Length: 98
Image 1 (cartoon, rainbow, N blue to C red):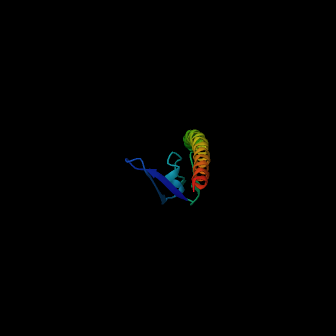
Image 2: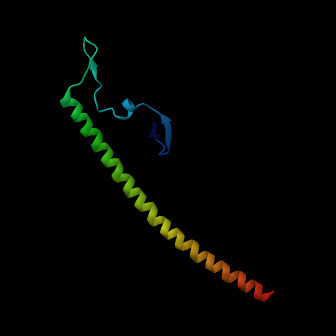
């Protein structure tokens, strides 16, 4: 698993991290005297809900970003098509003049 962290400059870096580092709101299980892992169900559920809310916000942001990129891609594709057509016309005119 990798984590993507944004720096104060706005660029992001990917580095390895544990699931515990990613899901900070979910409390760690405790070990009782017999060696069994024990969790407090209420706080564990609250942590899960908090992490789901964070994931939902992140997904919404990524969806918006993807839509913006898609629109920008359409505009750039149209510009490329127009420039390609103009270049073809110029090349045709240049061949006719020679």
